[in-house]
Length: 151
Image (cartoon, rainbow, N blue to C red; front, side, top):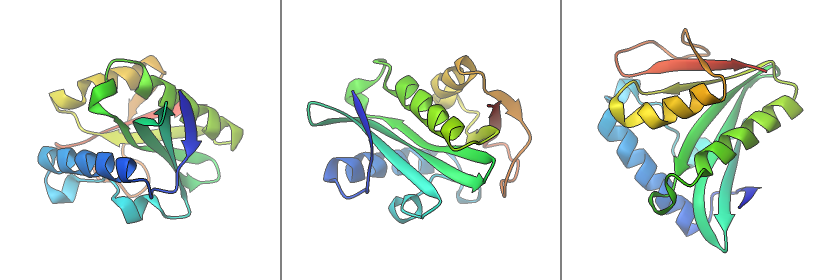
């Protein structure tokens, strides 16, 4: 698997992002939906990576720089054809490594508490993420949980 910085112009990436956004919009009301769209992921404080194998998109993930010591894991998604193959774990590991390289002291994330997010929450726990209070500009609701990892 090759993980590379992505400029979000590949049609496979755009399609998978569209599926991700559709799925997220079905899980939470608009005021509790924080998934970034294509333009949101192109902002300069976000680094977006895609994972590939033999020219086939496996998944993607992003890192948002909140400040010089705090990053946020964003938009983790595995292509449905590649679930349960370790794609998400490799992307999380890649993002954590990059956060450490940047000198961040912690990396945090926001996700949903519903059953559909269970596999993601379990993955984050395996990497040492722990539940925390809302960070940055997030607000607590019945539709989100927050996790952080001290680096």
